[in-house]
Length: 207
Length: 377
Image (tube, rainbow over all chains, first blue to last red):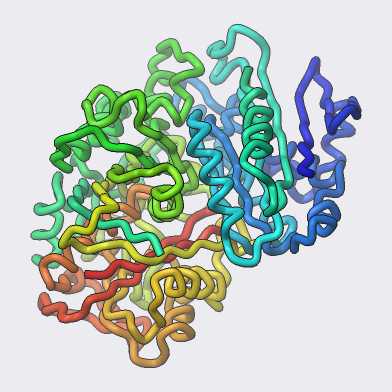
């Protein structure tokens, strides 16, 4: 039986959800879930992924499914780059933007930041891929193809997005910034209908 | 084993505006590089598909969309395809930056990587039934898109698909971000040959470039080069560094070979990622030694000709690999590069005849991702 773990930014607080459990923590408490050496280097989506792993001890959960956390394939869905990481650095003046770019933009801005930091933090050497798509058939087939791989007991499916309300002082969103993330451990014996349920839950986060 | 036959290929790079032009310039041992000035008296080496364009973000911004359309048209597609596998590292970053710097309004859709699909609809090579996915995993994205296609064609009953990777990312933000981690080189006007120097002892980092490529694949058997093997692993090592023992690259090669039913000794040619960093080239060399042994087949490393177009580089190199297999030729190494890092990797002064049938292609990217691909005649 699969289980999905969710993390959301709500009213300047972080809410963790798993089945019927809800836990709300402050942003400062959330930061403490991130390894100290990573806090300045990673965007919100990556922090959420790392926090979900720690909050719900997902490494141990993988072992319960008979999976090796160091050899568990990872699929991350992400449609927007991590603009939150550069939103304050960006300016309509190119020179100011260049002066504000820090050493971590090259790795934090792009969507594969999430898969990179997750695999490094947990020593996971399996295949990992990041996808931007709204095509559920593609996502479903990707999950199934990963589950079909040799000697795989489970895979991890993630969906993460964060977008700032403003970039370079220009308002992009009518409403507030949004940030959400979900991780699901999908065992190799998961059937087609269960995969659809998981994907609906993940894609439903965009509503 | 799923096989993807490559019906046609296309590319754009600083070496030429289409695949044939790039190919001819490879045979002539050309290497393209120049410079891009940024505010604050900053000047970096670059290689541009449209000369001088990255000096002006307003000129540069539309190139990402224009070149996608050009690649689509160059594939000469007569019917809508079943799927599009699109790959990129930075997508339309230059367009977004241009709008920020010129204070134009932006909306959330413009930041969405999935919106590239609309270009394929406008060019009438896709319709509402065509599957679309973007793989935004950086400098390994093109190979990952091929690997994804290979694993999905049977499940989604895909008969034809476009696989494209492209990056026109020579934007101020990207230059400065790479500069901050010492990935690019500041311009020096006394350099006699390209700063992109794969497998040279004095290699010092990658030459930031733009460009892209595309292939039209079919699952029907046709008399064309084909993709028969794919392997991909994470290194779990570092976001930007590569372990020089090459163990992760080796693992990706092993999986690709197993997928194709070949072993290392069966490989007749190797087209490497060869970004020209000290670490990358050493890691790839060590991986090859473990997989193939002391005697390596001939190796090509096209970033020495036209730099590193991030995710776009993958499909430029796949298109050129397809060309090598079709033309039975291996281009010489670029003029001015000594290719002196390893005895087993030799400089070629002339074009050579390719008598083999198999080709190994590699790619690596930030986030510690490594992929290998097997192509066969």
